[in-house]
Image: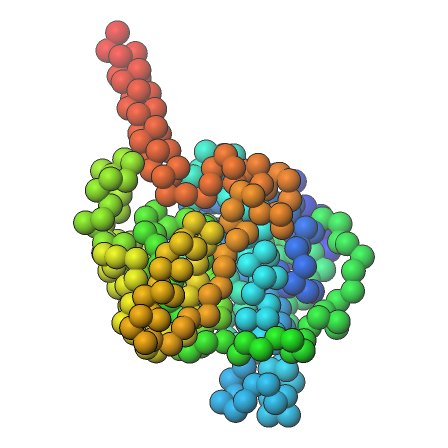
Length: 367
């Protein structure tokens, strides 16, 4: 692949496949960024093992002020540009899902199901991890895009290549929806303590959307209830299941990368409640469509124990029936479901195929 540092250069003519790829892009607003489809496609096809996508927007700016964030006179201009995390919940989960699905579709299409894909959201008033470029082989940028925040030396030292985006829709910038419209929105911008739960086996895009959104609305601590090994004995291909320590470490590493300034409290659970069954400090609960029943049980249990009610937040775009996804993405989710069961079955089938190929080659060499 021809690599260039010229921001006006066309697409590199061919794919130079490397192990680890980084893609950086600025978002003009929180609408679905269809213009990034060809860019993500190229970046994902260039990666063997890992793809990190970092999306920058002033609407992800961090509000550092300890004063009331609703009183804008206390905030700096970059902080005023940020969005209420709870008010932007729907837009951000649609955005994250769109990006993850585009990259995952490419990886699955190349039968590279185990490729690690991470999507990070960064404001212009926060530091990027100085080590984020370590172990990366190339950094893709979007032609014409100027990122309004200093990039760490580990990124600057990478080989740079600019990719032309797809056609941009004619739409207003975030001037109309850039700052939170608080009329009718009564929830606080973030919650100090949020909880969510899951198995998190072979951490995949669906898990990362759930974890990202939980961290997105959390200011201090995210409690992750992780299903203990004892409860996973009836899972399909259980011999492929990762152990609790491995699953815990994978979740911890991801959360530390996505939002390092919050506490990731990852605890084993052997019932539907976990810490939400007794911890009065939890204020919010992130659930998927598949776990809504569990959220209702938690609500009833907390009422019986005279614990404060939890504000629920629903992740609904991962569902294959989501009306917010494009038709192609819906079909992809119907087939693959972004699930651990699919991944474990793929590992089993792939191992069989590898063994079959090795046996064939051995037979040829001995005949």
